[in-house]
Each structure stands twice: as structure tokens, then as C-alpha cells.
Length: 267
Length: 366
Image (cartoon, rainbow over all chains, first blue to last red; front, side, top):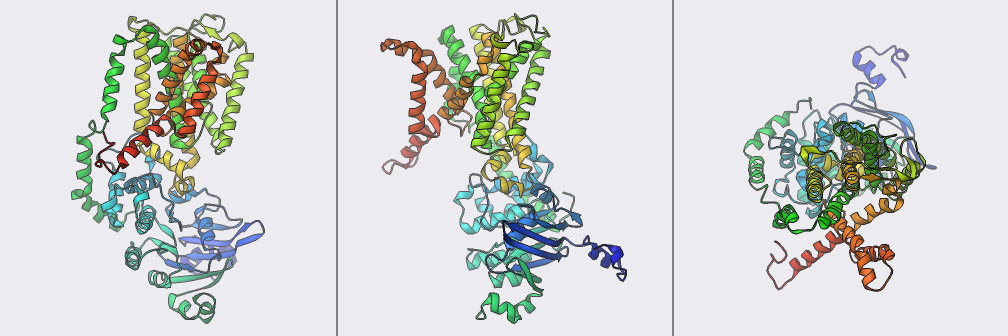
């Protein structure tokens, strides 16, 4: 697909969307094979800058695989991934992250031997030039100050010097989010952030997600419909590695096929 | 980052009167108080040691301990913080030693270029670091036991190459008469001077490792050890960090290599033979790989055992050349009772004293 092939497109925005360069995230024909198993087949998806989208689907629908292909944890078998217009399909994970993409993990991947502050500090260093610094942070270190700010954002100030292994599960999930927010992200992928949280922690999570600055778009994988539909403005349903339906939260909720397949009809 | 974030500005004003200043102040006030008392005692003892100990002890026990300890420290840095067990550290030290002999002065005048020490020593260190970095670039493509295998293969290759190459490495006999420069009119091979020289460099590298372990680079290295996938997802180039760790470790091993060749005034392929190369791993494991002090404890035990094993064996009526057996048994015992070395043993004793329900909570604390 190129611009010449679509002569009826008139506005610049239309032509940009044809090339896929106007979107925050543009996936075209992304497939991922594990041997003979197609974890993702021919996924095409565009997400506008600042858009908040939920990805729903049963276990094994390919949601986390989709995230892994976007962040480069592993490379897709076929297809292209564009991030703010740039083709990042063959980039290693760290190059994608340095361009403003972030993710959280379904099972917390934290540095349990380090303190909360050190975890966030590491996340801040990763996207700055200070990565290779052999000098310890000084009294007025900018990254350390940013880390302290992020600790406050996710309500972890009281435990900032605690080892991560001593945190509660909910606090670890919040730390995951703080690490994803480090260093001016442009787009974030949340992999089941509400899994295993108490009702109070869930409402705190919703507060954090809805309170993110407008330019930060995200995709959220979530099983809890209450959370998913409240924090998103569009929904993508996945089934067996394919995109099955896209729409507004209200449309998806009332779709009979979706109800039969996923909501079980009795929700 | 250049993207202006509306929340960022409001948040940074918060920290002006927040947690930030308070903890920084605390940190600044207590930096010397955080050093355990035992380290102060140790420092004083080490400084006045030449007044008490014989020349033999200073040179053969402590001089050796500091030099071998530094090489083991470079392994500890890679293995403890980076999770990469490199067998090649002794070889890197030998490379630095050979370069000092080749570029500087030795009895083999046909090969040695006779350049002054202030060219030959830095050049030797640069080459050692380049060599270590190149080994690292190869080894980071492997994990776990394959890292051990590939570094062992490189170490063996260097040993055989140095033994068979006569144009550069002078083959089997190597170089002798490699003397340290008479800087400030001091004979640096004298027991007392060598003691202070090696003590200085050992302390410096110990402090450097301690310092770097808490720097962004050191933290990132520990992150790479614990969770490389997560580090990549935070924007770190995992392999670049690993290679840089090899370079830093090679610098420490290189300095130790220069001191090593000066202490013996000679270097030969045997310096980097398979035995000495693996001994470094044994030393690091005996001492404990979790903290930078571990390798020096391990080196001290190793040197003492190696020096006195013959006397012990002979006093027991056994043949003296079985000293390796004694070292091997001690190694087995330590690893058997404490997989994380003497340090691990010590930490477990402290932990169990703390946990005693009859005493108050401060039982094990100094």
C-alpha cells in the first residue's frame, strides 16, 4: 500500500493514515509462529496518538504475544510494526524503549533485591544518557529527583527505601506502573495491571490510568471488564491469535457474539 | 527528555520540600559512620603490619594475597554483579605482565624494547583491557556453563600460544629480570615497599568496585544479572553493559598483572597455565562472590594454605609435594558447608545469632 495507490485520498491526514505514519502504533499483517502454532496471525491494527485502547480475549488469544511483538521481546515472524511513523519491526527491544515505548509485565518483572527507589532509578537511567555512568548519583542528580517524583505518583513514598521483595503484591504492581512511566513515555502497554489487586487497589489503579497526561496513549490487556471498559475509549477483541472485533466499549459490551464468546452472557 | 510533560513540572516542585532533601542530608552526614568498625580496625592493622611482620610474611603472604585477590576481585565483579563466570581473568593479568616485559626492560634484550615504565605500563594496561573486552564481546553471546567453557578455551589457547611463540613471548622460558622502576629512589621489590604498593592498589580496586556497584552502571549490571529481559524493556542494551563490565574487570586484572610480574621479576606461560587460571575461580568461590571483600579473604586462605601446606604435610610424615591435595580438600570442605564461601558462612552465623529468641534483637549487630 502506498500513497499513489489511493488517489481518492485528499487530505494529508488521510494520506498519512494510508502509509501508516500518522499513528502512534501501526501493525500490518503481524504474525508470530511458535513452530506450527500460530500465536498471532495477520494482525493489523492502528492506534492514534493519545488513544486508550483495551485488548480483550480469553487465555491464549495472543494478547501477551501481541505485546511481545510490539516491544521486541521477540520479533514477529512476518509483518511490520510502526511506532510514530518509524518502522521498528527489526529493532531490538532497548531501541524501541528509547523511542518512548513502555510496557509492564503480567507477572511482575522487578529487581527484588533492590529498593523501590533503585528500581525506578534504573528505569529512569535506561532511557537517559547516564546508563553507563560509573559515578554514583550526586546530591542534586536529576534522574534521582525524577525517581523520587515517580515514587510519589504511584503512592509508594512510604516504602521507597524498602526492598522490593518485602512489598505487598499490590505495591509491586504499582511499582511496575511507575517504571513504565519513567523517562517521558509516548505510548505504554499495560499487561493485566489489575490482576490480583484488591477492590481498593483497583480503584487506585483506575485513578492512575485515567489521570495520565492526554498525550500518553496506551493499550491495556485486562480481564476485569469493570477496569477495562472504564479506562479505555476503544476495544479490540482477540480470539485464537486474530482480531475478532473492534469498537467502542459500549458496542462491544452489547455485541451478542462477544457476549457468547467472552462475557459468558451472564455478566 | 525533550517531550514536555504537563505533570512533570508540577511534580518536581513537590520534591523541593519533600523526602528528597532529608535523605540526602542524612546520607552526607553519615558516610564515614556507615563503614563498619571492623573495616577501620582492619585498615589500621594493615597499615602498621610492616612493623610487626617479617619480610617473608609481607612479601610472600600479603603481597601475594593482594595481587591474587585483585585478580579474583575482577572475577567477583563479573560473576557476583554480572552473573558471568569468566575463567580468563588470570590470562588477562598475564597479558598485562607480558606486555610490561615486552615493551619495558627484561633480561631478554633481544625481544624487550626497553621503553620507560610510563609508556610500557599504560600501554600494557590498554592492551590488557582491549584483550579483556574482546574476550567479553565473544563471551556475552553465551550463558552460564558456556561462558565458563569459552573463557577456559581462550585461557588455554593463550597458554599454548605463549609457550610455542618464541618471537614475541619467548616461548617456554618467558621473560626474567622484569624489574619495577626505581621510582622516588625506592626499590619497589623490597618487601616493605612491595607490601605498601600492592596494598595501595588492592585497596583502590576494592573501593572502586564498591563504588561502581552503586553507580548507575553497577546497578544496571546487577539488573542485567537478575533479569536481562526486563533490562532490555527499560531501554538498556544488555550486551553492551556486559562487555563494558568485562572491560572494567580487565583493568583491575591488568593492574594486578603488572604488580605480579614485578613481584616475581619474571613471567612465563606457566603464570597463565590451566592450574593458576582455575585457582582464581577457586579463590573467588572460597571467599564468596557476593561482596568485594570475599576474593581477598579467599586469596588469603589460598596463599596461607599454599605456603604452609608443605610444612604441615611434612610434619605429618607425608610427602610435601601433595600440598595441592590439602588445598583441594579445604576447598571441598568450604564449598560443602557453605556454597557461598567464607562470607556466606559468616553471614549465616550472624543471621542465626540475630534470630535467637532469648536475646534482644541487636544480638548479631555490631
